[in-house]
Image (cartoon, rainbow, N blue to C red; front, top):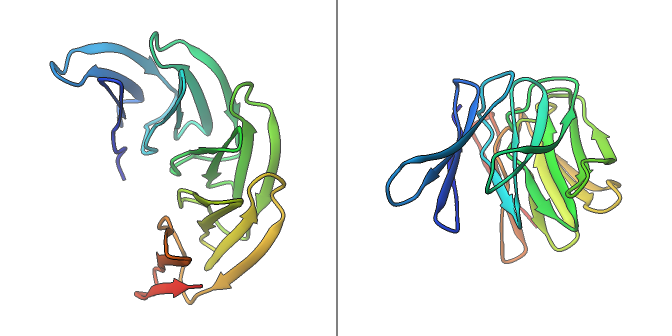
Length: 185
């Protein structure tokens, strides 16, 4: 797995397996700054206002000033983070191989809630209205209340769900490692 770039206001943000988060000028490719983490970065960055959020295989989610690259805060989880963060309702939501979907305050990094599954959470969360949807290695797609973390529903498959769900027209599409593409409404 590798990090996909995020582009915002003329800057490209991308993680690397060399344990670095890079900010590059979108036109010239010139490095503006880089941040060293304790592990490779497969998570794709999310940019919201003046912060860049990214997970690392050092089990930490980082919030970094988008202009300077200085860390504002970081949150430690129980295992590696491959999931890309999503920002909504003042929260940063992300999965970890510690079997949890985590929700932290976007400004402070303070933990708001964590939802435990029976498998790794490598899926990046998708948010629609007041729901956060994500897959787990325990063969389930979960739908939680984005603010409280309470389970609304889950859909069980025959294989791990490591992909990120897509939502269109009230239908949730996702792929399981059982070889099927699912459409749930």
